[in-house]
Image (cartoon, rainbow, N blue to C red; front, side, top):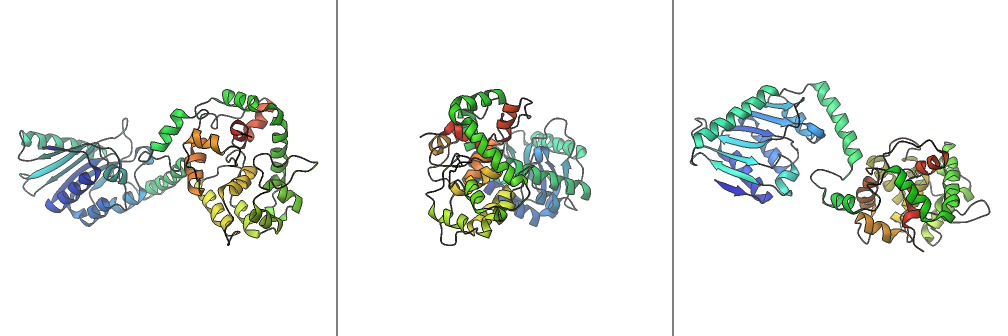
Length: 394
């Protein structure tokens, strides 16, 4: 018997046991596909005697279910009493006299077998009391098996849809990659605030600019609510949205002046169609997910074939179209946001979504219901863009 704590060693031991033994008995809370271990298991699928996999929190990859749900002696726990959470991998020869087992904390997932802090006990048939241990493990796996079932085609389709929805919502905040997330939410000045406290923080941060900021966002909201594409806006409206000008109508440069971004100014002035097409990928109402954002970024970059794009100008446009989802990352708020959200010094497109926006829309105040009082309601509908007033530094 020995303890294994290095993920690579856990993974390699698992692979070795698949090659050594004829019969596999496995129970795991979650499973991934497209990993070396899962691909190996699929090649050896005839050796699976019983495998039970949980799907709680939609953490199991639907591709794994799709591959293993038919004729592979794999069942799934669909209605657990609590959370189905075992991690046990038992391998035996045909007689059952020679066997080895890994049991501990590692799921059959990419994280569990490659990067998480895990601990597994490696037990062998020549260890003390091995026959009793073998019988007890097998009995428990049989118990799991009796409570598990195959997943029907309809159930798999529904699971895939919910899995995709959950994945889009969570973005990078995954169980297996939560280090930055945990650091942020525990130390952030605003993440855990209730709506009433967040609202107080907004109105107390810079009361002189509050009405001016709300005026800008409301006017631009009206532009987009007309249902027209950005390319059909007048030249002055495009420059107002882009933060390139101030005029008698409003101080449009609040939330990030972009007048010094020469190539951006040029593309807005020329009404580059790629910028308009990019904004069309962001819905005016409802959920904005990572696919929408990725399509925006992909199209936005096409407007700058000779470079000149960047997260400042991109986030300015995003924040103006959906101020309930995005904040313009600019030179006045960058330092405060970097500190509060553990961001790098050179924030790129992926980090902006994964380590900033995804965390913001998971916050306590963001998820609050719309208040009834009109002044609060106005701030609430622009609640992410209005973070700029908190982090603004002259």
